[in-house]
Length: 133
Image (cartoon, rainbow, N blue to C red; front, side):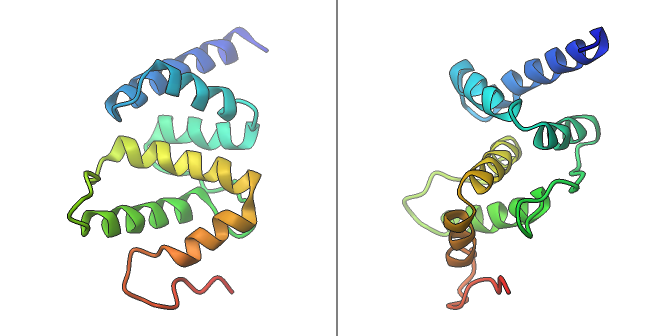
């Protein structure tokens, strides 16, 4: 690994710590997230692109899903929770970003279960959920 690559990873890790802090999470959550993220070079590249551009690259796929697909689902999911009186969830960009990348990690580990969650929890009143082909 080059010096520049090491410095880039250090910068990303420092940003991860700040992102987790802004999302109300501590350093242990940041370390856990980071440790899993760096095991997947393609997802790490998506994360680095997001850091640099504040938008998603969307080259990495798990099945038919890109990181943007997950973000859309996350936003719908959060909106559904906002409608519940007992929910403390509110739109929080930092939480959405972390949750989106965590969901992509989960999708890679267990695509069947997570795909079912996408279909079941749309954030809408549609009984049939998303049409996943």
